[in-house]
Length: 100
Image 1 (tube, rainbow, N blue to C red):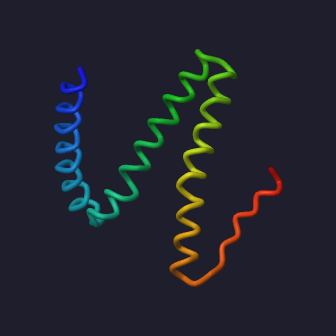
Image 2: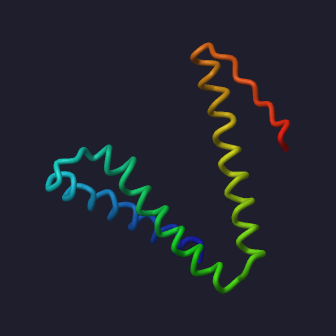
């Protein structure tokens, strides 16, 4: 099943990349904008709709679990990125979380 899923993902990715050419020419948008802004926005929207549908079935425990998971993922990305950017720009970044 894993190998089949991987092959399907490869073909879906190729199709997605090839499908980005037409809107970029018709709407006169750069392919970078479509790849970095439009496609992730659509994917996040689909993820949110799936979360709403599942939360109606699973209840409050699943909603809390999803909120904690999202918070942890964001903090594991944003905190190191803030430190690296601060270091690169010469700005001291203090990650003081006394409120928690």
